Image (cartoon, rainbow, N blue to C red; front, side, top):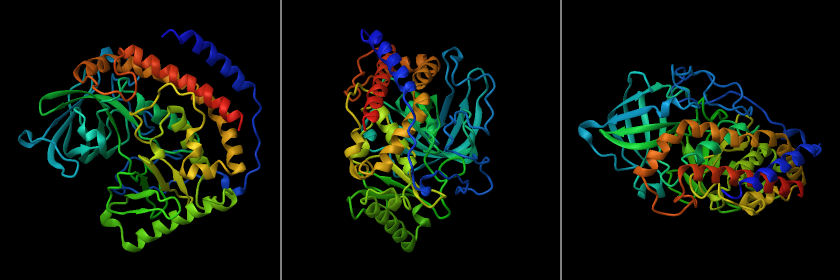
Length: 443
């Protein structure tokens, strides 16, 4: 708390410094331009809400353009300290104790403050996560029998309930997703809203209800016969391979295994390995046929601004084959561990696997500097976004902290009050902006 005046002065000076610098004007090859298309794949063709015209336009997607606001409920207001409540009742109260086995025919409903409960019908539900499976507060995946719009988000069947047990602020994922939405080239980032959960009559505290990563018009828009890849050392999907050049653990996250043929899987492997091979040339005129430069730059910005270095393992790192036929970075995911902490290091990701090849390319570095200048104004608005979310979340988050005390030390704010933890998060982010601006200007 004592550092606040210094940080405010530093940030003010930083804003003036950033606004006074001239924009760069790099000469880039023609294939570096961003393309937009709307050829998304759907789980249930014809039943999705209309697709977004350009999911990478840099505008916030909360709430979605096709989803009406719930009467009397404001995701950015205090709502008298109340959040929507999701109620789940499994048949005969059976426990949800596996990430592999669904519990079928669970009854779901949602109740908005001051409104009657809304019946969501039946759904199947299971645990989600890897290391988080061993935390006292569990996370869940669920799939409704029928599509629904939940808390102003576009209709779908597939959703996540994230426990975020180790995050004292409960804001880390939400803020990181918002940063990603405000970039120009990352496309879709998961939307989410805060709810309280009652499972089989037991109150489980505050959860982050968010969209699951999947191919759909309102989520990840891919090429025809496109796919989503996940790079993660857990290496636990059915279709997976180690890349030839960097030995990266690559898993085919979507489409579903039953829709994958051996020929299709071989094509995926061949394309990824070619992209990796050409990237080692460190010349975007060569690797640009396979990899979208701008999306990887914005991906770097999100991870550096939040100090999320799990992708260095790699973990929770996604790519997808976009309508332009190239691998795009994203969606971003998993920011509640070890993030938004004080960090005076430079560009940490510059030395990691693919990224060291990117940074060896002068075109890439020039484009990164240009995009930083273009997107800096929206990055500066994130502190205000945090303030708006806190108004909405504070009461429930404070209660959640009492119900679920954090027994480890992963983010460094576990023993702080909720207010102190949020202020630390904001100050860390503002300092990180300053460090990155200086570092990028000196490239």
